[in-house]
Length: 282
Ligand SMILES: O=C(O)CCC(=O)C(=O)O
Ligand SMILES: [Fe+2]
View 1 (cartoon, helix red, strand yellow):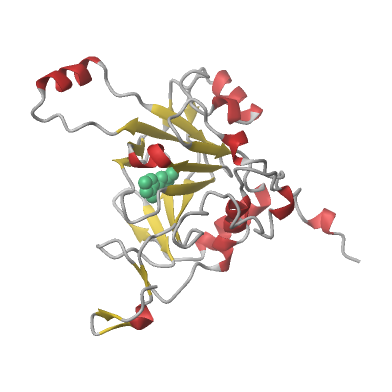
View 2 (spheres, helix red, strand yellow):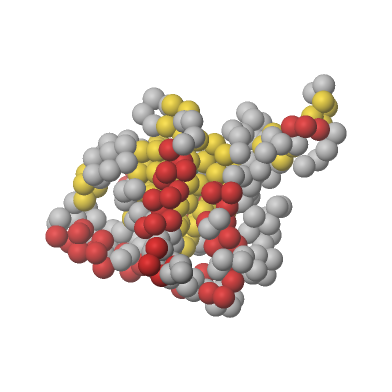
């Protein structure tokens, strides 16, 4: 007789309405969900990821699923996302709701067309996942994700913690000396978001369109306090204790892997692209 309680780890905590996870100290809008995946789910996912080929960049590696975007920002493929990237992550993302408790629909995704984070996106769900691998001491330069995507990014972190730095985009001040002076006197605010392993970070709206994000290429993150970490209140107790005991310094001891879920606006079915002519819209 099988006893599932013996061979599975405890289920992920029921998801609460999105508002519960809002990072209140940030411009609108960002949400941070600790323990979005269970340790067992994260181990299984890491194993699946390791079975697929990586594209190597200078300091890090990545996997675009189901395919890389074309230079013009199109998703051109006949494939859809593999099942291990859909369940449980997309099901759970779609079950997150702005209005009602969503614990009963966590696995079925039954709330997906209600009042969720992808309700107004063209495909009503993420259709692309970029997996990035960061060995300790590596990062990603400040950038914006741009117009190829619906402005919602859902990032799952695995392996090790990382600090995402978010900063308002500079206004165009090239010929404006007074603005330049003002910016020199008031350096732009840098927000730090501490991403624990197995967490989900959602950024959207002004956070997506008016800010740059990046990760410093360091082995030790420093200056972390309840004042400098934007999502301090949403962190687990163990993490807070680790930061406090380290005097605001935390070493990145392991490789961190992120899965970035987005809805690419323009999708073309590679099977319908013929002689350079697109016969189907999606
Ligand atoms: O790894 C991350 O958390 C950020 C990745 C990122 O910014 C991107 O893929 O555009
Ligand atoms: Fe990005």
